[in-house]
Image 1 (spheres, rainbow, N blue to C red):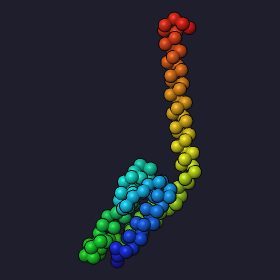
Image 2: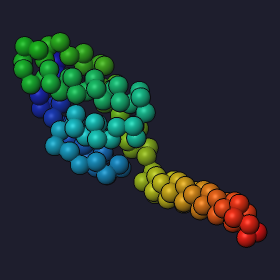
Image 3: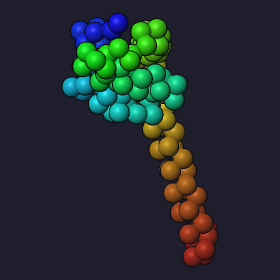
Image 4: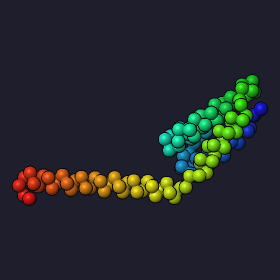
Length: 124
């Protein structure tokens, strides 16, 4: 049977990983997963939801018996493994390249529109 202490410890580990890898600060695991949002794959979000449900059920000794310890352990390991595999430097590089690409595309679009406007007005 999983106790409230076990779930608090698992939640603390995952919140620490969310903060270190994704920069998500939160008071609870549910809030942290919600703030991480689409930065986590669908399967990891589903496993996180299972952990949040187990955390809620573990607070009451009667409902704690409904928790499947094997499923909780598997969900914890899945989320933990995914978060540990995130490379913070690569995430930042990818974000910077995405912003630079969008900026370059916008500048090209503005330049093309400016040239079209000059042609339309008869200056070119």
